[in-house]
Image 1: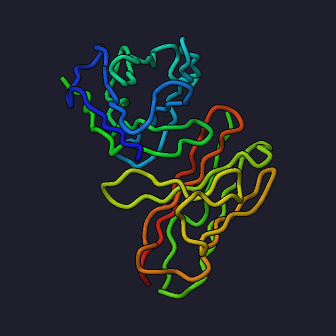
Image 2: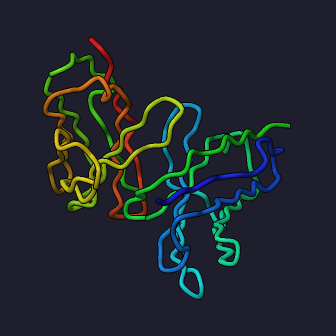
Image 3: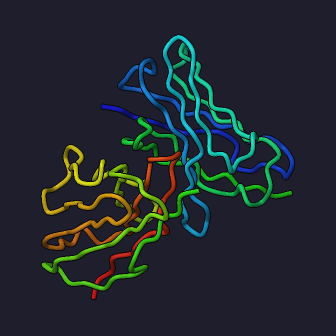
Length: 117
Length: 106
């Protein structure tokens, strides 16, 4: 049974970098797609990007995030990471990791990140 | 960018009703469309992929149809567990979600 658990700071200051981790159990990280999606307080869902991990990771990102985003894998820990730089209050959202990409199939419970000084 | 527009935004219905939600894409996306159900405080749950394929474990009262730019999600007989918000997502070019349709009790 696939289980995904997001974790990370719940509060980030404007202009800093948001860093989240998704711990995966029940399935191997390798040879699978892993996605990040976020949902703003207004409930709109926004696709952030995904990674396909073999021995290296092939990534695809939402162009609207303008190079601020990096998704990576730590296979030794069975974790996927999200980094989003230069955050503003518009990046306040619940962040979800998910297994699969087209489309994301199994989602974690999500973690709320608030950007505020 | 491909924009996704759902209608209606809110739908009031009763148990046993047949319910249809529409999703329109701003560009042709073939059948690269998914439908999700979300309940308050929970993550979205995948219902339908590739426009009409039922995800494993999803009740058969849910069905999807369409291709190109217009798609529908149908619930054949609404059950109490189905009151939720539904989202479509295109994954033809990156991924874009619709704004959601809330199905509420009439």
